[in-house]
Image (cartoon, rainbow, N blue to C red; front, side, top):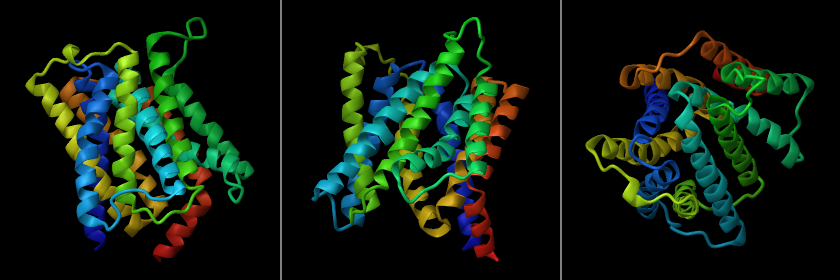
Length: 300
């Protein structure tokens, strides 16, 4: 069983890390927000079919369940992916993955604000600060030009991570019996719809898409492998490993993003990329030190 979990963990990290490279590659052929919307058109339909097959609840019923779907669709899917896809136009796959790996740290910060039972210790506050310093080191903002393309791009990716973290916390404020597969399916479809509306507002058009083989491969990989299949593996590991260990996927994914970005796109990580990643990882350890200790004790 442990071997199976380890294989699935490595596979998920590889798939989700390489997804950043697939996004970067696909942006050569798609307008960014439309690209994200099309990804979740396909992934949402696939997940919806799976939810009908695997669960006894294919749609939300209560107000709380619809609230959960609304938060998931607007923040976890639409806001996160629209900001990520737009932001990744001006940075590398590895840098985007590293900034997104700040999400578990940001989640703890938002939990302190929105969940009364959660508290952030002084050491946890230091962890948040260390994580933010990691993003600053990674983005290398120029004080004389804070609106340069790279800084703005990484700022948008940071906002994407913040939207995901906030959505994760807000969905925890309600307790429902809605199966996670059903919630994800509806969230994907709602999020895709919202991104189509945003895409129209930005004057993006389907006629601007270059329907090449590479474009279809990037879209198919993101929709089928990274989204539909990836989330199913994530749910399985979440149940078996718990939230602390599964959060470590966020810190394994940048390695895959850097490797695939180098191989397929010729992106070369800089020493500061490694420093930024190390700081964000250190922030995660400081924020989650108690939970990590409990998880390690439980493994003995």
